[in-house]
Length: 196
Ligand code: AMP
Image (tube, rainbow, N blue to C red; front, side, top):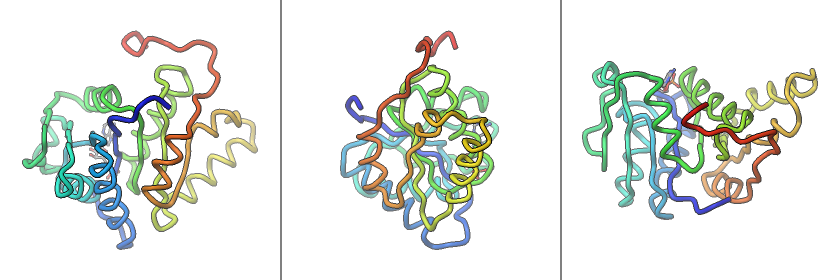
């Protein structure tokens, strides 16, 4: 894995039921700041998104938020960030987040978080980027999702080597260690991200 300068964090716009979720978001934000890793995220000040950003900032870290104009009010665009980039569409948001990150970490979250994580994974699977994706499995939140991926392998829809692209750990330290060990899958041809 080349030098890890920035990580894109996907996280719920809600805080979830268990305190373990917000604790993990705060611990991840703090760890990234302490390691000097720039946090890129969706720019909101609500749910786990707000928690991870606040924790990284409180620990002296750099945080870039990328938010569509239409969501500035609903997701409460965070005013205290190092940088808040307001874009026009959701697609632009995801593209910018991915372009600026060396790796992706998903904290617990809902449909939006799953969608963003799965898109980043498909881009690695297709060879659009060579960047690791990790799940921070706080409170066992992602266990059913990982079970589903194993089901997809068993049923012949997901090649084992693509399943192995997604790494999982239950602590922020474990997630960073797994990202640092990550090897890109063999793909037929790496595509130009600007053309894909
Ligand atoms: P959720 O996990 O549903 O609470 O959403 C987490 C974040 O994902 C929120 O900032 C949503 O606005 C964002 N999100 C949801 N769908 C998309 C999408 N298609 N593209 C970009 N961001 C999205």
